[in-house]
Image (cartoon, rainbow, N blue to C red):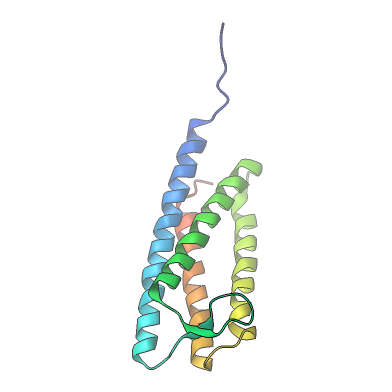
Length: 145
């Protein structure tokens, strides 16, 4: 009896490569944004923001917060791109639109939630832009389509 294996080995490799690229982009974003956080703190920016549910008191943003909030979205983005690659022949334009929408949504809290200063708002928004550029850039360089 003959069996047919429908699993595409290149898809598994592609998913693995995308996950690695996502982690690399996330790690680069985490390093760059941690540097921005530390430089901002050295310049006197307190980086106080509500880190819990609505109404939470302002707390200082720590490097671990920055690292986790760069790595987690990077992995989600890699999975999204891999999923889009399975559904369409041209996943990159769709991925860019979705990434752009998520970038805009991620910046909204920087401007509507209470923060300690305008400098905190500006630096957090810059950190979102840096993360998006590094994560999306790493993923699009890796994806073969």
